[in-house]
Image 1 (cartoon, rainbow, N blue to C red):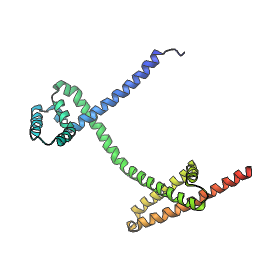
Image 2: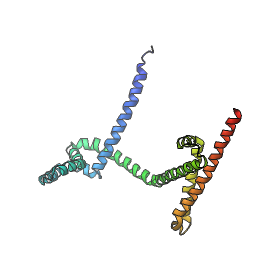
Image 3: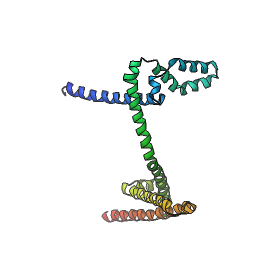
Image 4: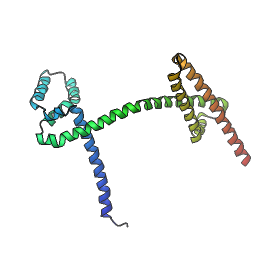
Length: 225
């Protein structure tokens, strides 16, 4: 039996507790920032005014389903009310620093989202191109090898090298499309037709290359036997 190492256990437990604490702090900071867009709202909050607004909203007595939806959507007001009811010392020493951390995290998230928007757009287009090319190649392979079932063809296409060929072709098509959109006037008019033709040609060439690799492996296996 292995001996129990207390130091190692405490070290691992400390790392886990620290990770959980960081996660909880970040989540709390983001919630505080979302509930209070401006730091002045934390320091100079007036609970009675918020309570009055909530009471006036409840006096309208909407239907039960609308009440439930309002309660779910009104979490910001409830959180703002609770934060406003805290002592000023807690607001200054705890809530305000949390707001600063939340502002930093939300700002970084927004900036990262703006930077990654073109990347995500390209990735979505690439995945669509990959799926279309894969489907065309699958059909062409079935025509070239009618004796093989779709399951067998899929199994052979799932080879890492062949998937990289298809992925590279899809990325090349999307890069060419992006460059042409930026440099060629009037490209949008024939863009769909051009992509269709280019994709069909690329998929057909890839299918022929993959079919040849099938034949080579088959000949090699028969010769070895």
